[in-house]
Amino acid sequence: MKSPHIPVLLSEVKEVFSDIKSGYIIDCTVGYGGHSEALLEQNKNIQLICCDQDDTSIQFSKKRLAPYADRVTFENAKFSTIISKYKTYPIRGILADIGVSSLQLDQEERGFGFQSDNLDMRMNIHNKLSAFEVVNHYTKEELETIFRDYGEVRDFKKAAKIICEYRKTKPIESAKELSSLFRKFPSKKGIHPATLIFQAIRIEVNDELGELGELLGSIEAAKLHDCTVTIISFHSLEDRIVKRVFKEFSKSCICPDGVMKCTCGNDHSLGQILTKRPIVPTDEEIHLNPRSRSSKMRVFQIS
Image 1 (spheres, helix red, strand yellow):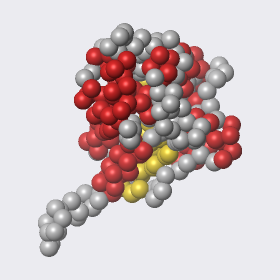
Image 2 (cartoon, helix red, strand yellow):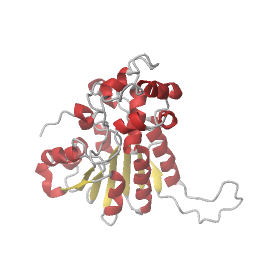
Image 3 (cartoon, rainbow, N blue to C red):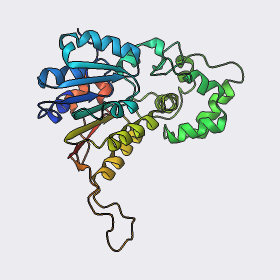
C-alpha cells in the first residue's frame, strides 16, 4: 500500500536498528507505517509492536503492513503506556517519532493546518480538550503561560491579548481564522507567523511534553536489557527533554552534588548515549521532504 508520507531520517533509523536480529521493536508512533515497514523488511526475524493513539493511523498501517501480519501487533493507545504493557517481552528496540504526524497534518478536518476550517488539533479525537476550548475559554494568563512555555513565543503577552480582544466579538471557530490574527506577527523568514502559536496550543491540547516524560520514565522503570532507544523530536522543547533524560540514564553515580565520597554504589548507569550530538536530516532529505527540516534524532543504548 503506497503512502503519501515520507518518513523522516529513514536511512538513519534503519542504520541504528540494523544489528537487531531477533526479539521485538516497538514503534511508539506508527503513523503511516513508513518506519515500521522499512524495519520489517530489513530485520527479517524481528517482531514489531506498532502503537498509535490515532484510530486513523492504526487502520492505515494495518493495511500497509498486511504482508507482515504474522510479525506485527497493533496497539491503539498512548505511547506513554506501551512500554509497561510489554516490559516482559524481549524488547531490543524502541522508536518514537514524537509530535504531530503527517497523516494528521494532511487531514484538513483535524484542524492542525493554518488553512483548516476546523479548530481541533487533537491527536486522539476521543480526548475532551480541543484547540477550540483552549483558544476560546482559557484566560489571558493561561494563554500567556502556554505561549511562553510551549511555544517560546517572544511576544507571548501580545499573542494572548490578540486572541482575547478578538474573541470578545465572536468565538474563534477555525484554524484559518486563528492564523489570520497573526499575519503581521514577527517571525523568521519562510516560517508562518502563527507557527509557534499553533505549536503551543497543540502541545497543550495533547499534553505532548507530559507524554514524552512518561514514555522516558516508563523506559527507565521497565529495567530493559540490550535495547536501543531512538527518539525523533521536532522542536527544542522535546529535544532538551530527551537530551537531559538520556544524560541521566547514563549516570553511574547518583549521589548529590558536593558529596565528597560516593555512597550510592556507582553502578546506576542504564547504558550509554550513542549520539553526542543529535542526528539531523541531510540537505537532500530536507529538499525532498521540507517537513523533516527541524527533526533531531537521539539514540541511547541500554546495556
